[in-house]
Length: 318
Ligand code: A3P
Image (cartoon, rainbow, N blue to C red):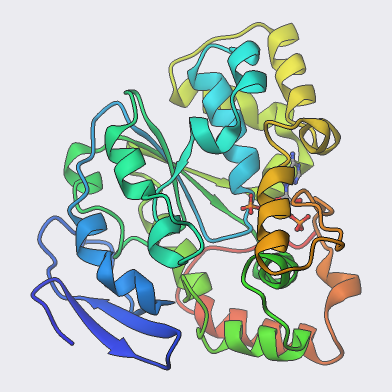
């Protein structure tokens, strides 16, 4: 199925690929749009999201799933709201930071999150996992602040595997899940290209490129950079408090950020109320070392090396 904006190709009953045809307003001097896998449902919403109105004072958090989105959303929201802990603790993160396309991805999310984002009071904070070619075209003309976070694909793959079991009812093997990522047959793939496109855009004045591993190694060193990007200045004591608030243990305890309600609703919808799952699962770098099935470290190495060919971007695994 082709429109002037996208060519949509059906892969199976659940998934399609979308190829962007209309390159007006696309940063085509640095990028070629990739063919993206999405859920079938997304095809109905692709045009609406591409035409979504962007405002200069928006803040966008963009990532491939499981790359540290929630962590970054909380960090950015607090920095951009002058460390308003009262509101941060009183209003759930997913209310303060709208997940733009979730309604377009899964039937389960009945609330029209695109409309919620459209009508959110400004300045809006919007979260999206969409790759450059599916994001609203106005991002590249209106140029709001975009914070992009990358995480190494091996830890992403493990985190996404556990996430998919809870949120997408995945009940296949870990091996077949990893195979689907390595063949780009999973929503938002290609995974490495998602990152490389934003890596190519990292010098744009409205793009801040971070990595999960850098944040994990030394969040206190990353915070001043993020504050500078938002033209905010805080004292060392304020930044120390912020780092503490953003620590894995604090965010896991905090009902505004730990997503216990979202997990509970997903398990309930699947009649699996008794199961335990924490959205803030392990929060470490290198989880893949104990989690990848035999042979899959080599398989992923080969996949990642092929995908990174020609780029100077390097993932961190420790
Ligand atoms: P794991 O599943 O490896 O534990 P996203 O928000 O993009 O869905 O990413 C979720 C991943 O980020 C999970 O990884 C989660 O534990 C981790 N995470 C969330 N908050 C964190 C924090 N404050 N510090 C470190 N990792 C965090």
